Amino acid sequence: MNGRDLLDAVGCVDTALVEDAADPAGRRGPFKRMMAIAACLCLLLAGCSLAVGTIWGVQIGDLFTGEEESSYSVSGTVRTVPDAEFSQELHEILEEDWAAWWAKSEMERMISSTLPGASYREYETWAEGAEFLGVGLANPLETAEWLERATYTGTLEGKQELTRHCRTSFRGNADGKVERAALTAGYRTGEIRVMLWAELRTEYAGETAADGGQKVETGAVWPEAVNMYANSIAMPDGQEAALVVSQPRREDSYVSIDAYFIQDGLLYTLNVVGPDGGDEAVAAVRDVLEQALDCFGQE
Image 1 (cartoon, rainbow, N blue to C red):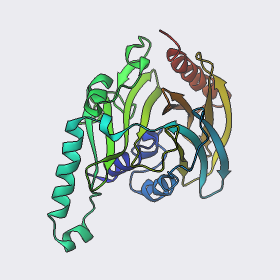
Image 2 (cartoon, helix red, strand yellow):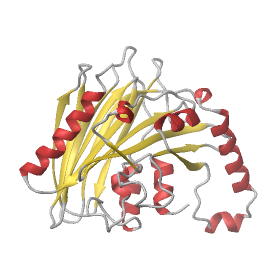
Image 3 (spheres, one colour):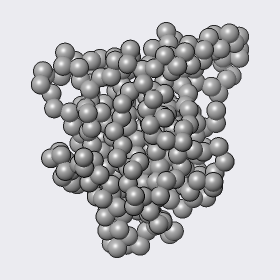
């Protein structure tokens, strides 16, 4: 498991943050990004008590732009997915992973780059990934005829060896219980990349309120100056998706729009990335994002 694999497995984070530096749409090189993303991962907090009748939702928090670092935060309330709902296969993988970890000597564990209980699997379709997790997850983009199937990072299939269309990433505790999991898939339309992922948290990820909800905080970090602004957009089901539009302040840059929304009480993130070209580029990326969000309102 390399640096990018580790981040995918641990944090269920935006794959655009862990793209290869040679890709103009990537936000940073995989190893230079690790510390910055780790700071973002530390924002994942256990929930506190919620009132009965909580409405699932997300909102954008602080946006910060500095010459050496830029970031934004996202907070929300999601439902807890019971550990018991996850597949037996996933639980067996966690148990085997922890058994292998404890079989190492203390010195081997100290110098190991492996994070015990964190792993991933890759699949050809979203349905296969959801079946592995054992939890039903909606994704109408799988049947959207206007989208071309790509790897889970949004690159064309065949461009990256051993990288498939979907990835499940998950983390569990030493007792073999699932704490967090995510399913990611990638698509393209022309030069614009579309990446969707759904995140799941169990009772072992943090405190669960009486209504079954948990509070979660996440976000994104760049090691450079980035122009950002936040707004929202109405989805076909009547809820609001929270948006962050980002443009790094450098040549050969890109436009990235992150949309955060709730489906079945779970946090979904839609990341659409395209080459920068001023207002026209932003409009083109947003058009694709809106078209993708509209898919979630179709029967």
